[in-house]
Image 1 (tube, rainbow, N blue to C red):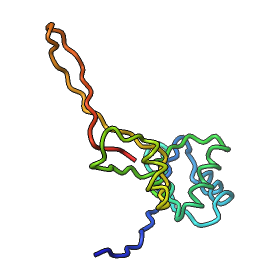
Image 2 (cartoon, helix red, strand yellow):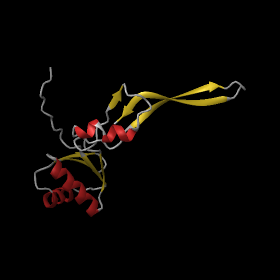
Image 3 (cartoon, rainbow, N blue to C red):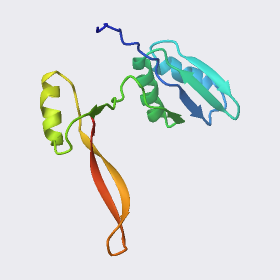
Image 4 (cartoon, one colour):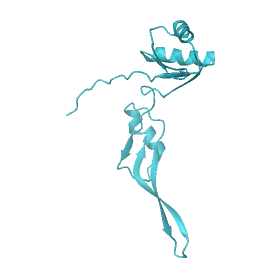
Length: 142
């Protein structure tokens, strides 16, 4: 039985700004760049955490920080990053192009690539040498 679940939108990740000693600098920057109110948390050693309420404000803050040459970092937004899915039971001889352009594309799935997983094992050759053997598995990462 399939249930329709609504996808929850996670808030964008925090933005950490370093090397700014004055709160007024951060406040004036947010006031000029962001369209909505953002929250700021002060940490030790001139480190500030900025929390954007939505993804549009997050993008405007990050582009403004790039333009103003602030020292900052953030994490990748979970709402925009691609999802990795494992397809099981496919024969290892299936071509990756057929998986991407075949049935899944007809079902409106956006797939960038398909990669066959391999198991690597070191075996002793009959001459006594160690040889790395790759064995394809019936698993594809989409």
